[in-house]
Length: 255
Ligand SMILES: [Ca+2]
Ligand SMILES: [Ca+2]
Image (cartoon, rainbow, N blue to C red; front, side):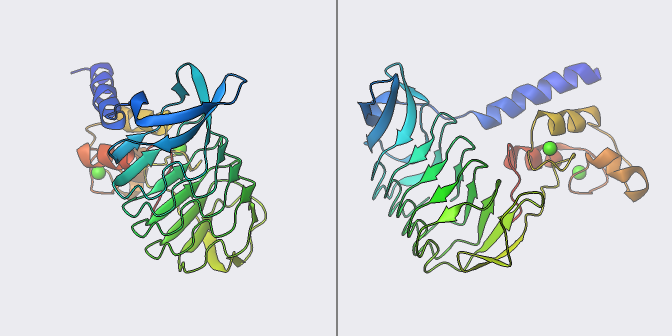
């Protein structure tokens, strides 16, 4: 196969890995904000891995309302769309099965108790535009090991991390970070091995670097592990590296 064909085949496989979720509008109730946007007021679906839609009945979803997903024990994963700018109080409070949460870059405000008592939550990525996090937002998330901030340090309400013993990770060139944040220790965010250009986004650029080296063997330190496409430094650029790319797609968490 030509390299071009390999690239197309990889892209198709990769997109399939990324977008398996089906959006069901009947799983939601919402209120019309009167300006072409809406606020999700309740989730009535079965849970599991949920992709929140970016529009409902033609209205752009800009807010996840107070307590919209509260007590949704069956929710194992949630994808929040880029249209959302605020997440209300208690929005995911006591969602006890959630595996990670990513707050998209569009969100500026996170309310009180948003992810409180999410006992299974291991990691949270906070988007680059968040400027304010409400009180007790992560209260009693006792499995949490890492909170990853893409932007500058936001303002915090009181007791945001009460009952949490995680590390706060930040990107080196962002501002406002000290040795601790909200009482938790801080550290520089270790970039994903799949983030070839170290911009803290695992994206199409990184994918193109992988595709360009696909099938290469003899990767080693002297050839920069095949121009850094041999992410796991196994000696070859192979499906394991593609899996690593898919796992860290659009951001790069290294717990
Ligand atoms: Ca990158
Ligand atoms: Ca490899």
